[in-house]
Length: 72
Image (tube, rainbow, N blue to C red; front, side):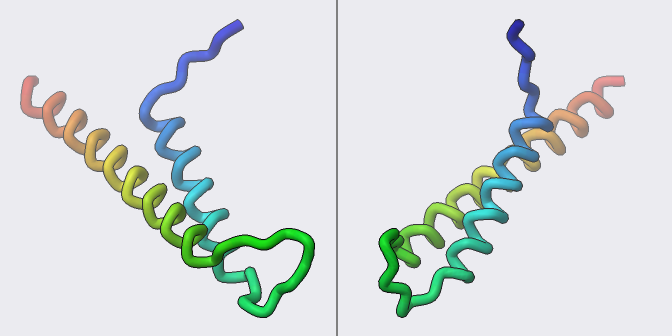
């Protein structure tokens, strides 16, 4: 069974991923020498890209609402 995904659900998913990535980039210590080595700057850039994509989906939703309201 395939569930259709609309812009609202996709927007929420992208927002949650952006928040998780931003929090993870802030919690990673620059002095961490554990088994997992993550590039903090790259993680932060990816989080910012996801945030921009989220804002784009919000703008698309607002545009659709404005177009629907003006066509009445």
